[in-house]
Length: 434
Ligand code: ACO
Image 1 (spheres, rainbow, N blue to C red):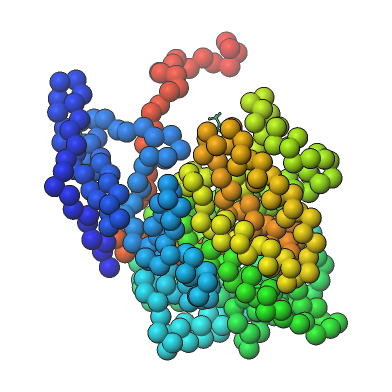
Image 2: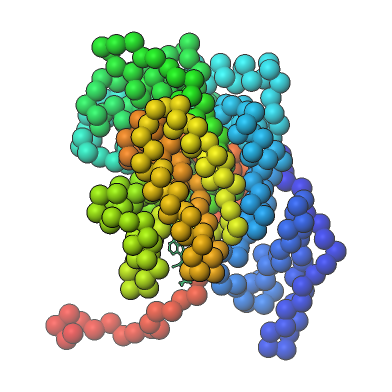
């Protein structure tokens, strides 16, 4: 499949040093317009400069639409609110990967293939023993995902659709097992092997929380809460980890290598690691800071690097629709789970204070998805550092869809340029003369 090239009859005119350059304007299906500068350097010798890529469209994409001003998020045209309410994570994964909602028959076949690939090689299971007990589960998850390329050498060619297909199922199916084993290892508990009689989220909960000494009772509320969180995380267009997945894949590195890199990109506290950072922050306010108000003051102090974690987003400037959905569900989920709402109360107070504070209003800083997701994960019993691997699990369909889209549209090597600001040529000085 090659993406349809957007068409517009408009052009932008650039005047530099007396020369005029005409630059095509392209327009997406939602009316977003962009100046196409892909031939600017060859015609003018100029490149564009955009630190942090805040103003750069790195690709065309059919997968996810975001309107940050209006708080819109849609996967393949379907609003996130509808999917969170009516779909399941596996159905949403199918949609993100294939572009269409599946028929029952297609969904059954998809579910069956994922269910049947969930075991990991026993040699991979033994790799866990090599990690320190206090290793972060993101480090373990990324290392194990990267190691899949050593175990499945028969299916690493990114340009062979059949090999890609089998790798996609392996990755989606084995990731819950890989994440759950990382939790169990950190807790010093025996690993639970996947169970094919359970749904995707049921099986994940069983692998994370089941113990051999008693029967594990699955709660419908837990299963639904987990499935909803995974749906909300399934894709988010060209964010840091997805761009990493595309970037690494653009070198024709295999899908496991690309996914391992994306997991590491997600681990940072400014990205997916923020859900853990939010919990740390709320615990800190409860135990040390004393009041949400005092903490908020620190986040506004320019001499202090403390940030209100779970607030602010590069794209959403009014609200993050995922945070709105989670806020709505947080109370009922927490009630259903019989969890102490202490951290939720602090979070609600912080949110109320920040939304009425000039500093936050002027900078258009609103709660993002991580503001509530960490609390819900904690209510589910997920250890504090375990919420980010679950974010990775939810994001995997999106990463894969983008990786495949990159290859399907011709797959050019991603290689940004730079403006060099270092020394110009210098004479080498021998060490004894320095
Ligand atoms: N707390 C306090 N101040 C903030 C915050 C925050 N959470 N976020 C931004 N600001 C301030 C900055 O200090 C800056 O102020 P200034 O103009 O006076 O210098 C201004 O708002 C703009 O901030 P930038 O960092 O330039 O905005 P950017 O778009 O680069 O950053 C980011 C977005 C990284 C998400 C930022 O808002 C942040 O660090 N948030 C906290 C971490 C977080 O929650 N990350 C999860 C994001 S969602 C996700 O990845 C799943």
